[in-house]
Amino acid sequence: MEPQSAIARALTEVGPRLRRLRTERGVTLAALSAATGISKSTLSRLESGQRRPNLELLLPIVQAHRVPLDELIGALEAGDPRARLAPKHGHGKTVLPLTRQPGPLQTFKMVISASRKTPELCHHEGYKWLYVLSGRLRLVLADDDLVLNPGEAAEFEARLPHWFGSTGEGPVEL
Image 1: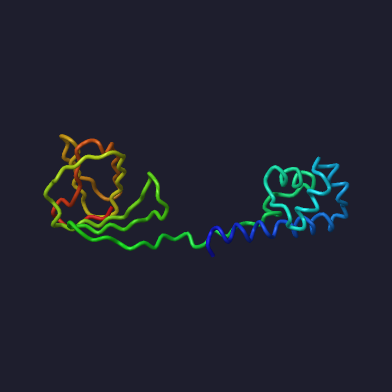
Image 2 (image 1 turned 60 degrees about the vertical axis):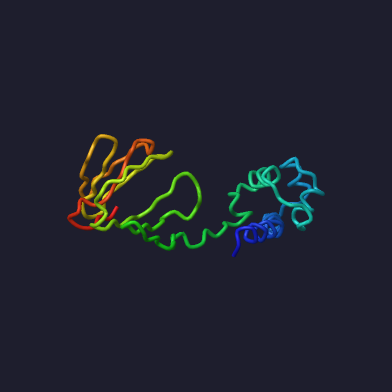
């Protein structure tokens, strides 16, 4: 289900939930109005779906009924959280995105072939964080030439000239 339609459905279901909660507790519109400071007509329109619910209206109602907000709005389904994105191949490496949402923080799994062993330094805005899963990773960072083994991590400003690849002994997974 599309996120917008799930939200619309959840909002549509608030009114009947409000009415059911109030009637199950034997509370009149007048009593709920007195407890919340919300007019009887507004409460009635909320229950009938003629008025869209908002936090300004729902929070006093959940406080008066002493129920969690989730009970009125229902929990939206999160859906399948697994990232199933297509890997990209090229330049001696396979890159598998692990982050579905766009934004400044992205996560990838990479497999770099043993043939990618000649440094070609680059620099750009951002920050890099690497964690070696298997193999041996060669990291050239400014004037430093390092080898990282499985279980080791590195982090650095991407504005520094850098390159990472295989030591040439075999593929590396990070």
